[in-house]
Image 1 (spheres, rainbow, N blue to C red):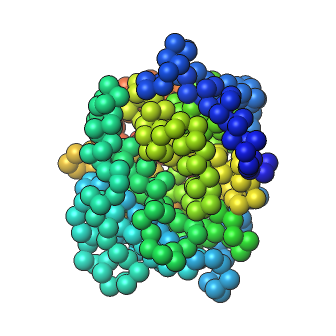
Image 2: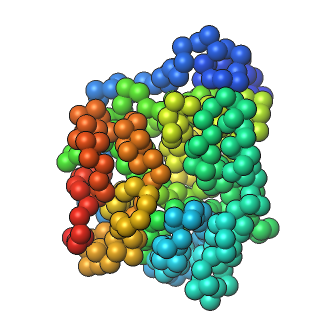
Length: 394
């Protein structure tokens, strides 16, 4: 489906789609509408299975290749909170070692300077998080102005910083940027933009977790889907995968069009529209990965490809002890995994209890005792288990 352009499309947006997707959100006039409606035009029935592509079919799909200079260059942006600092060096070095695309620069965005060990590569530059606009304080203040809980401000700040990354790149920077979470590391050579200039996006985790199957379905309701549908007129999911897997390849043209559509629809700066349309009842009321992957696939299908990335993520509560990214990476040596992550979450139990990805029966199981979990994706097949030492992956 080609992107709509021109005055006719903008008029249609103002006349119809904008009102349909913004109902019930504080800060907009149509607050009498049913709050947080499901996407009004979702055609995919809840019970119709969307088969994942089999692993053999995607095994050679841009996951590995040759460093022959034929692939487009990329920029890299890594945002790191204080809790991510122990694994930051490993994350950055993983990208530099395994990107088949030439890496022009790596921006490391943190509150304090990046580890000195990264200073031996001139492509790696530190950017003070405090110089990003909107900053975390701006997000917190705006949430308060909306009468909402400001505690997720840091969560929304990092999402907005990713989507606004092109505004902070130097002149002449590449047209594609790999955004990667600081608690995620690539272990094998990987292509991020193909020879035709298409971003290679991860399918990521299913929108509704169904372990031990590659048949996944769109959920009846999902916070991230609803928030994206309110933000961008005409936004709809293209399949049952979220695009969430701790990295994404952003295309300057696609991001620019996404921002333009949202600002035209809401008459506000993109970051304010993003916060207004997030669900205030959830700690994670929106997702930049869900928003971008499905927007790009729907409006710019010629500029993207999609693939499964076999990986393991260990998730756990923020606090002393627990697993380190280096431990998880060491446990994956000799395995078939392409990447691993090790993540610490504030409000861990609350997040598990409110995640739309987890069906009710599975939620009761994982929330009964919110211990560290290991989530594994193999060609779209999801498995979950408790993460207990010593870790070992095949």
